[in-house]
Length: 496
Image 1 (cartoon, rainbow, N blue to C red):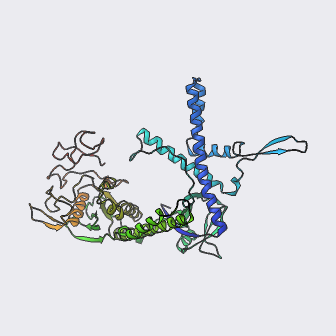
Image 2 (image 1 turned 30 degrees about the vertical axis):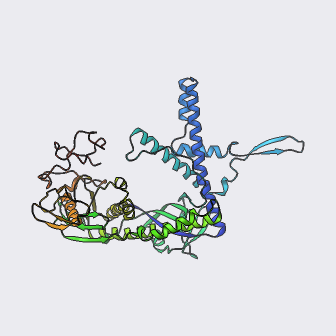
C-alpha cells in the first residue's frame, strides 16, 4: 500500500435516502458551527478573566479549556450534545410538579456519529490554518478565521470514515445481488450509476483498502468519492530505474494558450503537441443565456431554483469535460516520458490580465501540473519544476542568447546571434529540458526543485537568476527574485 487514490461515482438514491442524505449534510454543518461556537465562547471567557484581573492559574486553566485540536473539539462536542444546553424536556407529574429531563441533542441518533466528528475535524483544520497563517508558518495567501456555515439546499457535503470490525467494513462497495451500489453507515445500500467493477476487484484481491467516503450534493445530484489506499502500479506500468549519475533524458513541457502542451527534448525534437480545446469558450453563449434566465426569476421562487440548477448542470458539464481532457493529456505525458520538466508559472498573477484571465482559467494549467506530478510519482518517474524567473521563451535553445524584445504575438523564435528559427513553444520546451539536464538529479526532492551545478549552460549568458539582497526591489518578498534584477551581482535565488 503506497498510494492514495479516489473513485468518484454518481449516486441514485431513493426519495427516503435523499432525505437521509440531506439530514447528514445538515448534521455536518451543525457540528461545524457548534464547535466554532464552543471555541469562541471559551476564548471569550478567557478574555473576560484577563480583563477582570484574575490570577494566573485561573487564566491558564481557561486557556487550556479552549478546544483547538480535533480531539478536544470532538470531546467538547460529545459533552455538549448530551448536556442540558443541547436539549431538555419538562415533565409534569400527576401531583402537578414539574421536573426537568435532560435529553441532549434529540436527533443525534438519526445520523452517523462520524459525520458530527468529521465536522469537528474540519473546524480544527481551519483553526490550524488560521493560526499558522498568522504566525508565518503557512506559505501562500493569508487564511482568514473560520466562519459559520449557512444553510444551502443545493450544495453541501459530509464525510464518513471506514471502520473495520472483524472482516466486515462499515463502507462497502457492491453486494452480491447489486454490484452497482455503495453501503454506508446509517444510510444502508445506495445505488450508483457507474460501474464499480474496477474498485470491487481491487478490494477483493487486497490491492485496495477503503479509508473514507465523501458524499457531495451539487447540480441536483449526489456524488460519492471513495478514498482508498491502493497498492503500487504493476511493474510493467512503471518506468525502469535509470543510473543515478545520468542527467540526460529530460523532456520539457511548455504550457500555453495557443497550444496547451508542447513537449520537447534538449535538441529541439518535439515529442507531443496538444492544442487547447477552449471548453469554457465553446459553451460561453449557453452559459450567458442560462445566467440571464436565473437573474430574471424572482428570488426564492421555484422557477429560480430550477434555473439555477440548469446553470449548475452546465458548469458541471464544462468542468467534467475539462477534467477528462486534462487526464488524457497527463496520461500521454507520463506514459511516454519518465523525466519531465514543468514551469513554475505564477498563475494567480497572470489572472490579473483581464484580456487573458478567462483563457488561462479555461486552460487549467494548475490542474494539469498537479495530475502530472502525482501520476509520474505513481509510475516511479521524476518531475522537476524550473525556476520561476528562468526565461524559457526568450532564451535561444541553441546558443543561450536572451532576446528581450520577444512579445506574445511572436509565435516563431528567431535568434539574431546563431540564426536559429524555431517554434516559440518548442524552443521553450527545449530550454526547460536543458535546464533540468544542467541540474544534478540527486538534489531533486519531493517539491520537484533542483539546485544548479557547475557548468550550467546559462552561466555564460545574462544573469537571469540574479537577485539583490532579500526583501528589496519592486513587488518582492523575502527570498523572492525581482524580474528587474538582471545584471546585479550573482547570488543564488530561492524559488518563489
